[in-house]
Length: 323
Ligand code: SF4
Image (cartoon, rainbow, N blue to C red; front, side):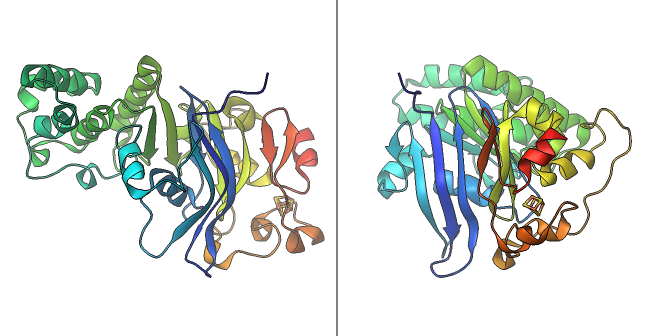
């Protein structure tokens, strides 16, 4: 038989203003059930726009093209009512800044309970589930804290409250966009542990968007590396980080000492990130690539499967992968 349809299939996704440059250009990957996919790239890589296209929250003036299939259903072709129904329920999102998701004038418990109330659950059951969700998200003394307002919470607690809020609708996919970037290192590690355990316990799929390779390396089963609005490389996390098949991934790995185990020395990435609005011709990475040759300046590399499940958009992927 054929392969089962993944939970989410992104195929040839593009995002941009009509007639303008494509901020996201032909991005394809899949999110299987109960799997964490890390979407990694520097600023301007298009990772956040990709996440926003998936959840249907693009800024004004830009449009998405290509294919987004949610359990086989065409999301880009769905009407606004259906998109709203999917958003927050089947697909939920957590952000870098929890204040963007939390209502400052409402008690935490009331906000988390809202989706449950909409489902017509009786009050006592709503209360029980709110306490349970806050506890699951690691909020200590949830019965007391559910009566508090967001401004009475620390940054880490707000992040936990937002996670509880996102889980209230029992989503099948959680989009987490830089969920720990604003937090200090200790809190960051705790939130990531929490996300990992929630992912496992609830059998959730997660799309973890981050610029930080360390965040993705320890949490994701699969990794999609984006550069200048395109996929540079994707595949199983461990294998991809241990043996990159794209010079950009290799440079990323070298830039983080904790990921590169063979050496304590990190080599910073040369040059500055490409701006997808002024994407270099050919391979967008060529101005920064140590392996760039003539053909890299003129021809856009296609995404090719270099090993089972491993895809790279480099003319010389076989060379990089084999070295
Ligand atoms: Fe480097 Fe060329 Fe590969 Fe691009 S296609 S990553 S420039 S070797």
